[in-house]
Image 1 (cartoon, rainbow, N blue to C red):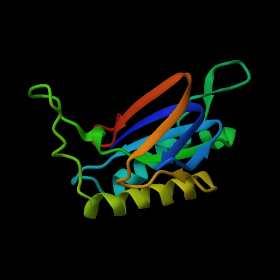
Image 2 (image 1 turned 180 degrees about the vertical axis):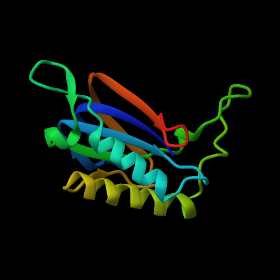
Image 3 (image 1 turned 30 degrees about the horizontal axis):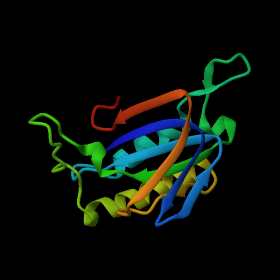
Image 4 (image 1 turned 120 degrees about the horizontal axis):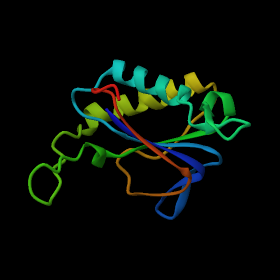
Length: 150
């Protein structure tokens, strides 16, 4: 499982011209799922997200987590995070899971993240054509791969 975390001042997801989800200060997390992913990946990544110290403390040092700040969380599925660009100029998405595997893991990811955060999380809609808008704060953008634990 690969995720891209962006610290945001605000973020939203629009589908068919309608805003599906909107958050204020917090994290936008894009999630890419592959067939080798499982519940252990979900647990490890959701724990990492809520405890990652990437928010400024009173001294301007990134020393506070999403739990510390009470910030919001927006989670969006994004199969293109599983792109392989090793050959040619057209990315291959063969590693990206099909919906029968990805949807249950995505739903579990959102549910567990909400439990760990202690409040509802906002989401996109799996498989929809989404327009994601954000104001990256910092900018702070972090990529994490659960298979490499980095």
